Amino acid sequence: MEEPTIRLLHSRGHDETVRIRDRRDLYRVRHGIYISSDAWRQLTPWQRYEARVRAFLYRSPDAVLCLESAACLLGLPLFGEPRDIHVLAIDRSSSTRSGDVVFHTSSTPRDVIDVDGVLLTSLIDTAVDLGRTLAPAPALAIWDAVVRVGCATDALTERSNALRTTRGVRKVQWLASFADGRAESPGESVSRAAIAWLGYPSPVLQHEVSIDGDSYRGDFWWPQARLWGEFDGYAKYRVETNDLAALRHEKRREDRIRTRVRGFARWDLEDVITVDGLQRALHEAGLRPRMAADGTRLASLRRLFLNQRTT
Image 1: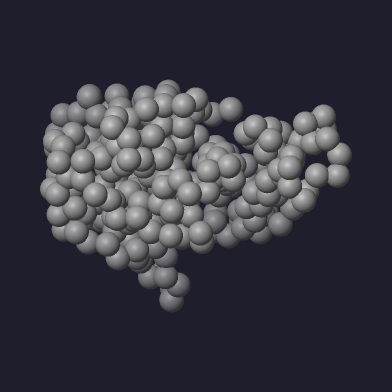
Image 2: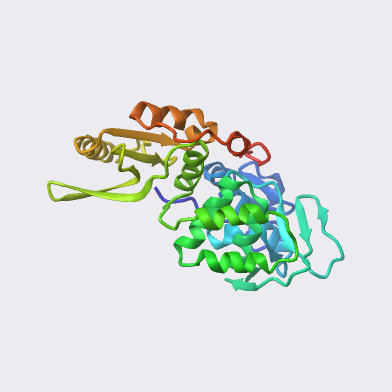
């Protein structure tokens, strides 16, 4: 299924044929900037955030984006819809807020890049800043994604060490030791974090098995328990016009894999965020923890969406 296009309309632009603010088929993204109501309803929370960021840029094209605002235009994963738009403003004496826009100062120079005419902090700087400020699980999703495209954890650690602040240093150390580019989705990243915090042994990522000449790859594999684990994305099993064949294919795939493993666990993002669903799926498949659970970090998973806009 193709992602909906984010096409903004401006009340003072060439799109105007009538008084836009009086049109009920449009949703107001920002003062003077609108989007089709139908298109808005189709957007995921993080796509809505991108629309808000791009609407802000229409009025402030010279702004330098940072943190989540830079991440969304760099293609880095976000969970939910962040509350604020973040701007790097090194000419200010202190960080300030204006509505939903936060202007950040920094005592350490940042690398600023131009992406399609938009100024934002570099991939490494954005990952380091978010690694220090986000909760551990979503920060891991960012670092996994950055490592996946070829950025070494040593480079991220070196950049973090150059910052003149101690905020989030211990979290960066954990990220550097745990980040793995083999995690292919944000859901797999937060699953890895939850699995570790629940006390389970570390899985092998992207394990492949050959069955009758066909190759199958799983998200997680525990060799000693011979347990196969898979994270399901939001739309993997949506039944649409042409999806029935895909569902049958997936069922045959799972049946074949089950002939070669001792246990098979499947879970989705809600199972991870609530923790209990993931724990139940792994337990029923035969996996047992080796260490006590880390209650503090598991609680951070449960709080993942509490401070983010979802409307």
